[in-house]
Amino acid sequence: MTRKIDIFDTTLRDGEQSPGASMNTEEKLVIARQLLRLNVDVIEAGFPISSPGDFESVRRISELAGDAAVVCALTRAVDKDIDSAADALKFAKRPRIHTGIGVSPSHMRDKLRITEDECIERAVHAVSYAKKYVEDVQFYAEDAGRSDFAFLARVIEAVIKAGATVVNIPDTTGYSLPEDFGARIKYLMDNVAGIDDVTVSVHCHNDLGMATALSLAGVRNGATQIECTINGLGERAGNTAMEEVVMAMRMHGKELDAHTDINTREFIKASRLVSSITGMNVQANKAIVGANAFAHSSGIHQDGVLKKRDTYEIIDPAEVGVGQSQIVLTARSGHAALKHRLEELGYEYEGEELDRLYNAFLDVADKKKEVYDEDLEALVNERDREECAIYALEGVQVSCGFPLKPTATVTLRGPEGDVRTVCDWGAGPIDAVYKAIDQIVQVDNDLSEFAVNAVTRGIDALGEVTVRVKAAGGEVYVGRGADGDIIVSSAKAYLNALNRLLAEKR
Image (tube, rainbow, N blue to C red; front, top):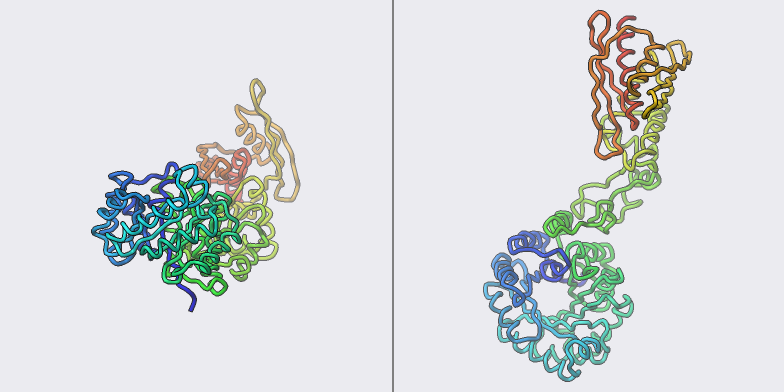
């Protein structure tokens, strides 16, 4: 059995420190409920001394959590901070006070202006003071990633003797390399008396894009708690992303000798909830929860995934709440992806039929970033219309502008396979196209209705034109045409209506 790694969520505390991501108490309660559904071990609910709102958030989350999770409140190594945290946690069934102090030369010299001995004295006092209120006290050694190994060991040993139950070794600035941070944790495990009797926690930042790697290096070398946030929210470049470290441990549990009790199927819901409340959008290519995390647009990848999912996916998307892989149709998609999507829509094409439709698909895909289901429906309908056509559109070109007279050149293939090209002019480019078509088809009719609709979203959507023409005897025929070019759509629609009229006369 692998080691159980506790997941300490700090979305509501460190995550909220991300510029623009502040939350009110009610919003924090909504997220806290989702964290409980995720089955996190610890919720760091806030920094009570910082504001009345943070105090109230910690108090209400303490009541909400019950026995389901430890509720933690942050403090500085200051008595009044600890008093406030204890007061906010008084209704918590599993309270924890998280106190600490900077331990790097930079923090002691430039921020705190204290000596190493004074640092240890303050750390020990803070832990001892917090211990009067709660049994579970966590100590953070701020900026441990840039601290002296030997001094850090002295601090950690002293706070353990003072009663700390959890020691937090943060890479506060995201400075470390994974192997160096792992070596730091191993040094502490080998050189600090009593460290085997406490939880060793890691809290890493993403300033160099290595927060997940740093946290896993900590776990590999003895840490048994990871501090993280949903979506990697947090100060500057953010914190370790919960979804990343949890799924990494699920993939590599044996190598890391680690597992968690997180309900991973709640990750997508949690990600979207936090994004919605904070207004911090998740990048599309974000690991695990990004919109593209389980999307495939390359034809080679699509073919592999359709044959067997794990050819290109190491995680079953259902494990994180996505549901299924997404085959994104683009100009890079192959026959297999198109055939798969058409079958999902209820169409079955093989051989030459599929080839013809694929070529039409590529024409659209070259003009659009993504081809949607509605585009495919329009393409299928267009192919059906073309196969039944008496006259087929071979080409259309228009010229218009101010003060030019709109003209159109149209090429049609007739029922005997003959090809004719004519040019005409009109009040506008579409009028000119229709007059040119009339010269070739030569069937009496009146255009009674013309309508344009976008088939899908976006400025690059296919345009579908619907026309109604009235024959000499009063019969009405409807024609439709779809294309990325509205002039071409219009020509196809009018020709489709005329073909129907001619078919009836035959």
